[in-house]
Image (cartoon, rainbow, N blue to C red; front, top):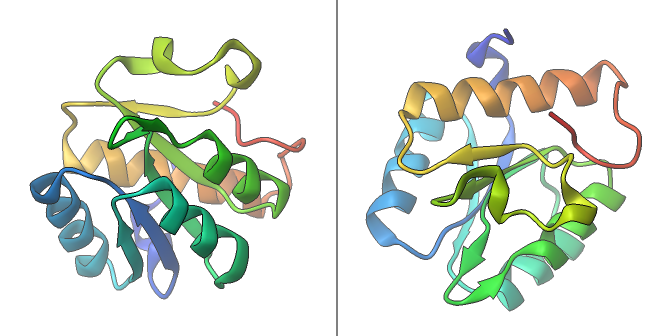
Amino acid sequence: MADAGDLAGLRVLVAEDEMLVSMLIEEALTDRQCTIVGPYSRVSDALEAARTLAVDAAVLDINLAGTMVYPVAEVLSARGIPFLLLSGYGSEAVAVKHASWRVCSKPFRLEDLIAMLAEQIASARQGNLRGEIGS
């Protein structure tokens, strides 16, 4: 398992439309010395950020205000930026063509979310990625 301490100094894009969940994620990442990019509650805003801003990783709610976050994840994947999807429906919520994308099920423990994100980042650093962030 990756060390969550590896997150220090990283810029993490957060896309979450539930304010309390977003605040919890932000606090957990800030406690680990991350800089938060966002948070974004709409896909259009998160997509613009994913295309144009310097980010090292991302935490994306799979459904932002009724719109699937796939375009944001696809941009991040194309840029080689590791990300973690959040879903109340688990990995079943991910379209079949993106089945390799890592999903953290809601509700989650913050420690589990941080550990999963750290694993995604460690995998990316090791060069184990083949175009998509996998599990």
